Length: 273
Image 1 (cartoon, rainbow, N blue to C red):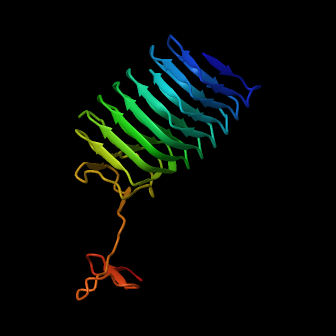
Image 2: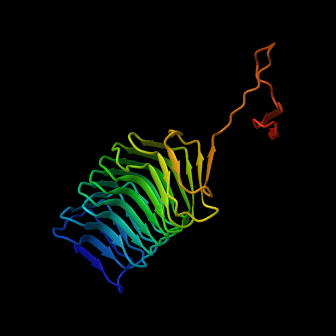
Image 3: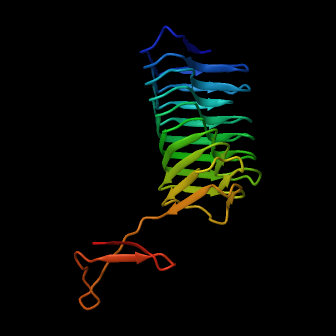
């Protein structure tokens, strides 16, 4: 390890460092303690399966911000890590089997303003496994090769929210934009774009528990590039509605107009001033 925090540490600041590790199963930073801050660092570890920063296991209330990662395995790994904040990290995974953000059994974390470039085969931008109530905003993911998904949700991961998520995958072989499989999942994506150029934008596997769902609010994606293998899974697709009521004689907007809309079957959807 470049830096190791055992169970007795914590409340430390790691700032303005360049840390390079060489060799399999290495890590730039491994932290088992809480309340640590990692800012403005450059982490490099690309010889086989390596990790940039691991919060593993059980650290809470950490801050990982304004760092540059170039890692062969997982740039940031969370294992039973909760209530931490991640901001403005630039991540590149240049070899096979890498993951930008790997989140395992970790809840209530916030990720803002991340740029993930995934270059290897069998890589993922974000893996969320058995983790709940995490929030992601302004996250940009690009994957280049085969079997490289943008976001992969698995093993009872629910109530995770993405806003302004932008996914671009370019390979034709299992390079899904969003991949959901195994156990319960209910995820919300808002104001986002999903573009798997040669694969499915959204792929839901068969091993999904009842009452699982994906809610898309104002999301751009190709509706022909959606595969759902479990008939109990619900895809909810919603867009913002902005009504402008204009007087046909004066050409002016009408104040306090009542606007009503109906579903295609004739049922009233809503009626509001």
